[in-house]
Amino acid sequence: MEAILEFKSFSIKSIFKEYSVYFSQDSCKEILNNSSYGDVIFIDKNVNNLYPEITSTFDLPVKIINSNENQKNFSELHEYINFLIRNNFSKNNKIISIGGGVVQDITSFISSIYLRGVDWIFFPTNILTQCDSCIGSKSSINFKNYKNQLGGFYPPSKIFIDINFLKTIGREEIASGLGEMLHYFIINSFKDYKFFMENAELILEGDGDLLGSINKSLSIKKVMVELDEFDKGPRNIFNYGHSFGHALESVTNFSIPHGIAVAYGIDLANYLSVNYGFMEKETRNLIMKASKIVTDEFPLPQIEYDKYFEALKRDKKNIDNHFVFILAETIGKVSKAKVKDSSNLRSLITSYFDKKVYLTDI
Image 1 (tube, rainbow, N blue to C red):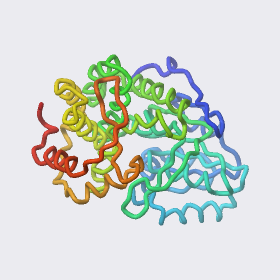
Image 2: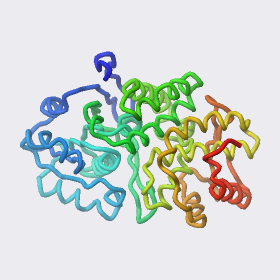
Image 3: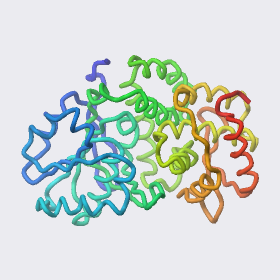
Image 4: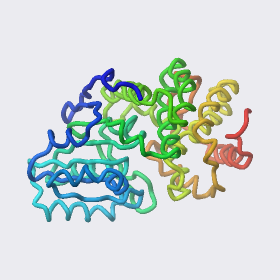
């Protein structure tokens, strides 16, 4: 794998504080240098099983989290708050968070509300969190069966990206990470799209420039996060593929990994863009070659359309009972669109899934 020294640390400017991203190959050393008495560890169960030395090395209270979407449901959060109370966690202590998106969301949300805000540091352990969600401040908590309905903005003070964690992730997780990176590369430039096409299949096979892809993805996101931290305007473009992807996750009870759902969502957004006259068919077909690298091995189940549209209606980007989507004109150019005709939208989406348009050129 690439020499990690070529990737320098960088900082993100936030209204809360400036926080830094470091590239490391020794998480235990980083925990030792950044922890003190009274701190606690939140860690993904699978990560703890694979790397028991992380928690056994330190005399700190450990909360092991079984990372599935149900665990970040609002009704489950009392368990984590009680853990902090039992361990006399105080305002000057910090939570050391080690895991993927579920652990990150739980930690960020709890840290933002406990004692009106406490410090936390983050060790992302999969591609999704390393390439995307580790920066940007967002926390998202599920409410009942509704994904990411609660949350806020509360960044960690430090992020340590350790590529050694990626040695034990499976092909599905790699594909999911690629799906998340893809939406950044399509939004940003044709050059980045080409970079994805040159590396994605190699990365799936355990080769390719994975670390460079992660660094590139974070660099794209950093610019927009600093411009629009609270997602009030320009940063909305990063919802490209996500409204449709989140709805897929919801109606399949989260059986489709996030980044794979996003890759399907990108193609559906492009299909709608063609039908609404924004995008040429040839452009959609070109981008589909990238999304299929992510989705090919992970076919969709039968979609229940009523539930799918209910999930779309709950998307937090919607305004005044109108759907709001990020649609694309071409690679490097996407924008927000308000869709008022829900019956036509439903007809297009139903046809897309029924005919399995995601498998073919149009």
